[in-house]
Amino acid sequence: SRSPRSAMPRVSPEHEQEVRDRIVRASLAVFAERGFHRATMQDIVRASGLSVGAIYTYFRSKSDLILAGCDLITDQELTQLGGRLAAATTYREKIAAAVGFWFDSVAIERSEGGSGFLILQAWAEADTDPAIREMLLRRRREMVTAVVIVLQEGVMRGELPTWLDVPSVARALASLLDGMLIEAVEDGAAYRR
Image (cartoon, rainbow, N blue to C red):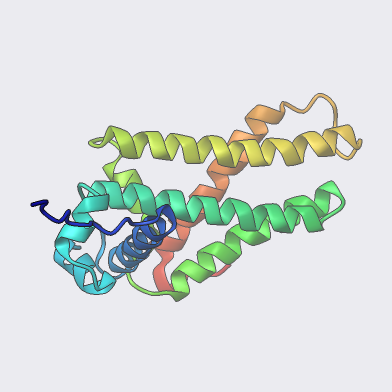
C-alpha cells in the first residue's frame, strides 16, 4: 500500500514579497513610534499581525529590518523624485523640484509622529553594523548620482559654468540636505521649513 504524500502548499514569490513588505512596513511604524533600540520584535509581531516565526522566516534581526526599511524608503523616494524631475524642464526647475521634494519628505516624516527619521537611527548603528554602513553608503551614492545628473544637465544646457566640479558640488548638496534633516530633529517642534 502506498502512503499518501503530504502536500505542502506552494507559496508564490508575489505572496512572499507581500508578507515581507507587510513586515517591513510594520517595523517602520514601530521604529518611528518607539525608536530602534526600544522597539522589540514582539512590538513588530503585534503591528504586523504575523507570528514571530513568520517574521524570523524573512528577517534574522532588527538590524535586517532597519536595512529593509531604509532600502524601501530610499527606493520609494528615488522613484517619487524621478517623477518630479521628469516634470521639470530647466535646470533651475529641477533643482527647485529636488529641494522641494526633500523638504516635503521631511514634513511627511515629521507629521507621522514618533521619533521618526529612520535614517538617523541607521546612522547611529553604522559604527557597529557593517551591513547598515553599506546600506548608508549605497544611499549616499544614489543621492549623489541623482544630483550629479541634474548638475550635468545644467552644465550641458549652459545654465551652469563648464568649470563646475560637478561631483564635489553634488556631494556637498547631498550633505547639506542631510544636514537639514539633522536640523529638523534638533529643532523639534520649533523646526520651520
